[in-house]
Image (cartoon, rainbow, N blue to C red; front, top):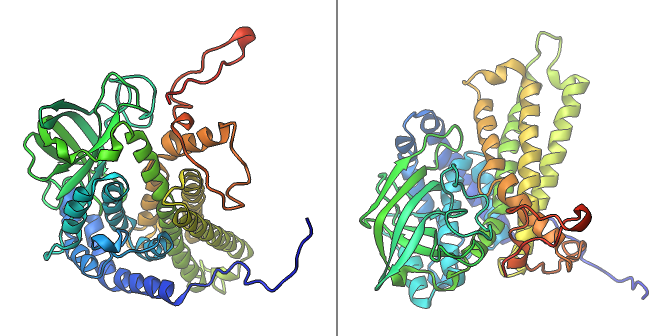
Length: 460
């Protein structure tokens, strides 16, 4: 095959007029509405009060179409593409990634209803979310569970039955499911008053006798459901999004609240959700690193450290900040690529989403610290923002599907598949994520003859 040379538009990294409009609108909101409340709210010791201090900004975000911009227009959402979503997210995360996480979780809770719900569920839930005259409507997504033995969520897709993996059970009883167990770490679930979000999407074990690739499902739990209580968690970063414990004690939920297409497929829901949020978490790291970099650069151009001229004229300072700038640019475009891929492939990006999230969050955590080294001991003074940048950056690799426990395992499962094409992402080919790719690191592989590992355990 020969190469045909012809006029080409090439790869265009310029934003369209509509994309630029989204970016500038988000920047205006972040700098003029959100920024004035962030510092005081972040310093509030009570996590619920800290979250409540952002409520006026959230209502304004709702009115501007930000809070549910990711939902399709046919159900009242903004209909943003994923590219547009992360353009907006970078601007908000540069001011506060915790607030951005609150908005992200609205999507994690309701996108699965769009993917797998009945038409009645879509209309009832998403239209309620997008038509609230108060602008306070909020949704929670609950997958994570407490640590312990057994406990935790990282091995949610283990082929072993309950109590390993997801521990919250949903027992079918007549026209209801009865929920028991605890969730730990979910965002938004406690709502504005600690008594529950308007609705929570909860991943539960509907069949305790089956493993994580067959026995998990998702159910909608509405505010005011008897038998559900919440306890706020006091975190060191992302303080403006509320993490909570949920306790289910014989909580009865209508069977019609089960998201139909997730029955036995809760594992795929978790993987698809964290694939969609991968580039959002990646761009959050870009936003935080950008803020740290711009602050450090401004410091270096004005602070002399006792020398005759500002620090920026010292070789090491310029080199370090140059390296940080390169990392920010590289990660930003990786996020754009991942978001574009997800747009192109029906909101699937299980491989690229995980690659993007792990690489960007870990690369830019180090970059934030490099900025602090440039500023020196003054970065430890809380009158500056660097301690907040570091706290926020340190959260990113360990939340939203931890890089060790969930993200890298998804990558491992895809790469180990006999059919995996290592050039698929380069060629923009669809990489299907299947149940056969799960469980790869959740059970020890048995030893075969001569110490050779046998074929890994899977549940199709």
